[in-house]
Length: 307
Ligand SMILES: [Zn+2]
Image (cartoon, rainbow, N blue to C red):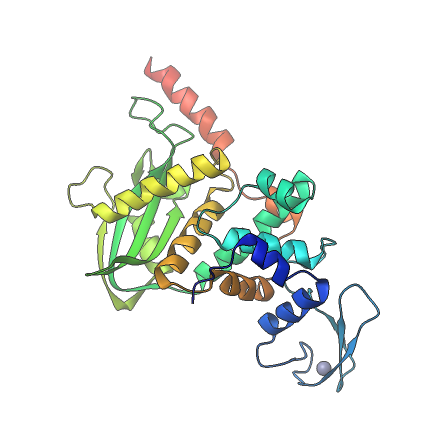
């Protein structure tokens, strides 16, 4: 069932660390405690710290509630993490600066929380392949900055894939950035589309139509509209995103879209994935590959040579 609580109702329901800890415990171990070391099912709960610690009754290993989750290492209270999860689980999303003012943290803390939550959404996406009647199309993020034949560094070719249901439309969606080595200028190479099909579609259970040319008349219109909606949402909510972190925002868009289609309790789904996804550290985040600087230099060189 979809979560129809208002933010105020949510804040009242998850008002204390104890309530949030209990919800996180059930999200992490839905069938009861399971020792990460020996698999034993019984534990002692130690409540001497801010968050409970669980000691395995068989091997005595102590397990923290947040180790192995996206919250690992965080000093931010669970109540604020939960509020951030609730606000991210809504299809409209929230920017880091808005989140900082709503939950009362610094911008940097909110920025990190947002990225860690998106990391859980990406993990959610990676667990499901497209199947059934699947359409695959070219899409792009970024305005058409220039009339030249060369790709502007800010323009990001994308591949969109959707499971199509005749009466409903696209019921499950994936949008992926195309790496530079799968592009020739704006054009996605056959290796690029093959790579998408291999990674994101369960070919044994799918009837796949791939249209990867940017201006082909055979493109599937609902996917074109989704590409445009995703771009507008990123620009409206986050004031535009560079290529370095674009994929995680696309995964967030797809998470919101897919949960809405399925009418699930998106907060509960997000909490479950947040509890099962090892955290993303600050160094991991800033070291994400960013080819845009080299691309900008190459683009300017091409323009100079063309003049
Ligand atoms: Zn154990």
